Length: 156
Image (cartoon, rainbow, N blue to C red; front, side, top):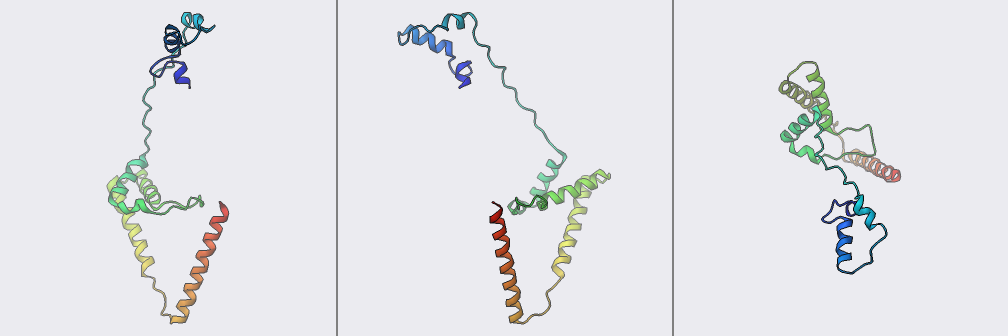
């Protein structure tokens, strides 16, 4: 609306009114002579906004370039304490870089540390279970999953 009033669009209000008057479409408005004498002030020209970047941006970009599937990770928006694995990775890398370690070395250190943690978690095997105890464990898991989704829908 303001763009039409102050002339930011193709035609300003005064020009539009002038054309309507010239063609006899309207009677001369009371404000027309005053508006010609004191035209509305044009808004300042728009300037390009400055790009804001953070040190994490370049690190995060590099992480996603090396791990494209990481973009598909699910984020729990209801749990404010949970972090995306990419954010955890980048924050650990940034901590090492603040200690004076070069970016490439910090990336490799965090990557190897997280790979070791993942291997340790995957090396823990469940004890041998018979079919009945596996079914019980599965049922407990299904119940816990259902309870989780019940709570998450209640929060909404």
